Length: 395
Ligand SMILES: Cc1ncc(COP(=O)(O)O)c(C=O)c1O
Image 1 (cartoon, protein in one colour):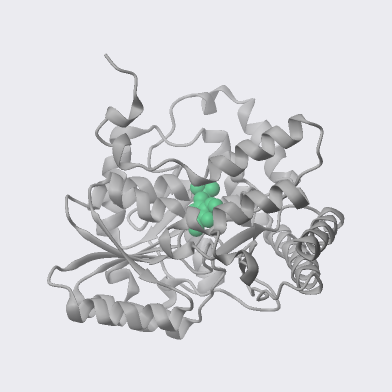
Image 2 (tube, rainbow, N blue to C red):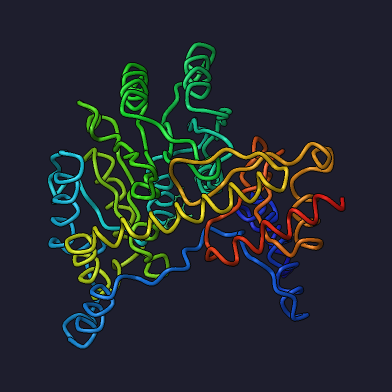
């Protein structure tokens, strides 16, 4: 028996992981004692709020919490997420049928696609995108229909055109605003138009809301469920990872349309026993008591955004300042465009000791850009822009 992974049916559909090239270079540089500023992966560097950690410890001491939990999440946590939606978005949700706890947003996305997408089903989504949006569809044997998204209006137009020319129904629309990696964000009116269009064509919507709370300058990202009637066709996926610095805890939710939630619950009931119960209990505290921490987390990213954007502009690299997310999406300087985003990222790591994610890793339409994550402190972010300035001047 060969151990070549490419010979496995599903694995053969997955291309080599582009980001692994940069990760390997980074590891090598660090092993050689070089000080790499890592603006690559969107991995929050801050601590989880103290009351959440304390609750986890307290709950972990209770043997009753050591057993298998419920695959769809404990009722008290589902009630809390629904209370959060009522308070923040004035959206009414039934905890029993319109919410489910997931092992992070990524788990929710992968298993939801697995649950509702069959061979050849069309899933329309913007590209570039968070990789599971594209590869989760492929793994479920659906057809990923990528639409360009330089900005939300262009995406909406491309979607309208797709509906006009497609001979097959579009089964699902998979969107995410504030958007990773492009940082594009939308207002409620955009969501209304999307819901109207999808409802007209009988398409279900999955809205990945991972950056719901990472908003700047007073901007508030809309929940798709704020749109009247959205619950008829849409679910929203909310993540604790960014809002509460809980990326390693692996907890998120899916809320909205009961039929879609039921499908996810059913498939999950075969696959998992739910999150470790103390994590679920601690998540209640996060949602109930830690909204001020979320604001502080967003403010930290905003300060880093300002330093990075201004520093890059001073280095002769004009970039847009995002109003949400934890990234800066930067078009590759003209001089380096021809070589592509992977080559440019490798060069920047080698010459400036700054790691960023090559746009091509987010799909074919990500080419021509690199993504910086705002995960280093202000001092190290300044160090990065100073090094980039020297690198660009010498290149
Ligand atoms: C758009 C998007 N969705 C989902 C996730 C993953 O969230 P979670 O940690 O809850 O799985 C990320 C993480 O980077 C993301 O960027």
